[in-house]
Amino acid sequence: MDWSRKIKELRFLENLKQDALAQQLGVSQASVSQWERSVAQPPAHIKAKLRRRLLVSPGERMTAAVRTSVVESPNLCGLLAMRDGEVVVELLSHDSYRLFPLLTPADLGKPLRGKLGRDVDRMLDRLVGEGAFNGRVQYAKLAVTAHRNGLSAAGIATVTPVCSQGEACVLRCEVRLLAPGEAVPKLEQITHFCWDDEDA
Image 1 (cartoon, rainbow, N blue to C red):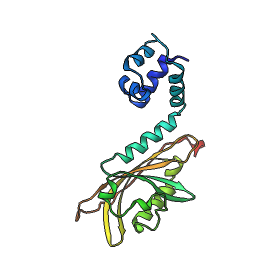
Image 2: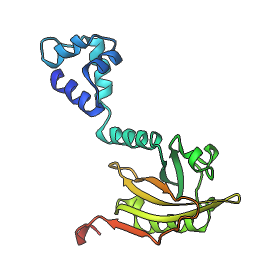
Image 3: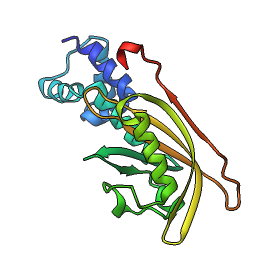
Image 4: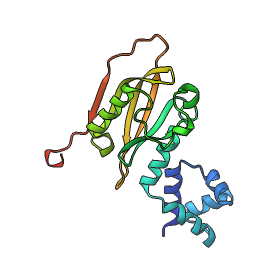
């Protein structure tokens, strides 16, 4: 195996500097530098660690990156997935609970239908019907108002499907909440991928 190339590739994929990778592996930055320049080879126990990390597929890396982007978003942001024919909230950003108290940690992994009112249910139906979970939708922007327990919140949802090979798509949904009293625009923009007729 070309360890020099593989280590550079790993650092690129994980956006790591040499010193960060060295710290994670328990070695010096100089060692990582020597391996990348092919001056030396990593010892067997380090090769084993690197092999395990390199076995992670690009799809798995992408999924991890999307999940991190959801959790770390400073906005109301969630990851919607299709489970047993139902749309569920799989993940929410840390700030979502503060910004949008209509959802709680207890809602994670449970069907979303019926929880946030007819407008949200209509949006979910539209996304499912348009094929957002099947790789047919590239992007969607929808105005929506949610209601629960006497509270309501309106916002503009930007929905981006993320599809891994061999798996159903998940939807990264980031919402810009509207200020109280701000008019909710009529907005339903769904952009499909342009497939050839034989792919339809």
